[in-house]
Length: 42
Image (cartoon, rainbow, N blue to C red):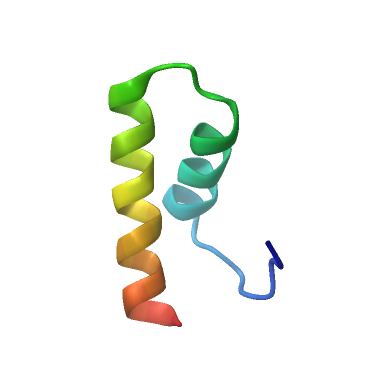
């Protein structure tokens, strides 16, 4: 996944969470954050 945009702190944190977290609820929350960001910014 190319990182061409400069994500805000919560968005980059969500990306890290999605990549590293083992927790399903954390992952779904992070996924939502990233999806919202994609909708808004891309």
